View 1 (spheres, rainbow, N blue to C red):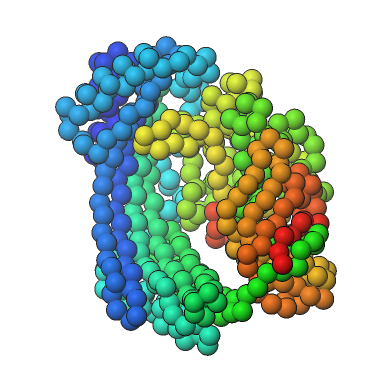
View 2: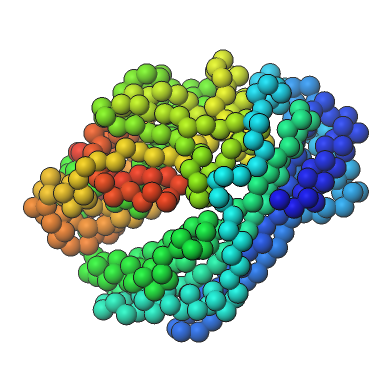
Length: 447
């Protein structure tokens, strides 16, 4: 952890106290990234960026304000603090605001043991070679007419958080990624698909050519896509987009939404929200996972816990303010950015996997839809009514029959989640480990 980040947060807190803040927290983030894109076998673009940004949240009584800057001068930090205090004095009072008590703070102040940083620093030429390999892998697949993009890159990020309650800690993360987007067909018959992977450690990344090959195979399979039939059918959410369905559940148990009464699960604590036998676990201590952490954005210690156990809802996702509004204990789910205050969000989720493959689920479907892509969304957060544009493949008699596009799937999330059947194909290196999911009786609007 670069020492200058802690010096920056110390300076911000000192400036806040001098400006008249009753309490404050400060964040500093330093990031360095390199990305390379190729097209038609040649370098298309190479970008490198380096930045350090600082953010300050001040509290004056029960009012708060947040300011941010990329100017790290002492004068700017003093001006930030004065401006933030002036803004806070004009802000509405919120009786639920406040830093964590010292007794609530995490004893772990770094990421030792989580293995989030590898230090690998591929050269731009190495990244170009990887992007070219991904492009070649996609072009080698029969039916691929062109590669829209092939990319390789990495990011190193250092984060430091400090507050006037005595908390101070930070950590480093690395991220390495490779991706390709391929196209089949021409004109109005053009279809595209993609594949990409990212890891904290470069050594964990799959071969770039294999990434391109998978992108090409997915794309070639979409040739000749057409609309599916209209009606009520079972739908399989492919593993690569199944986490979006669970994401709607997670959004509905966010403490901010529950406290406002704007969640379709606001009165569901202890009730069945998933089928019996299915758990939803949050475990932010999984090593080598991109959003692993020992403490949240308010300095509270994170831990493994069950959000849903045996189908029944066990808890909300809370930061300090949401917990106070609901008169319960915080769950160390605060996240924040440089220019915003804390808000609750979950990370590192795992849904119970089933005992069958996605192909086995398709056999059980008979006729229905396999969704591999989603666009747009119309979700009523209060009722759970759900509608999304979708693409994928039509299933007939348990087998893939033809690719589909330009259709809409609709239902009610409470009813949909109560019927899910998981496959066994979740990728365990992802932040959210969710397998393919079979959902009964959605309405499909197609041809």
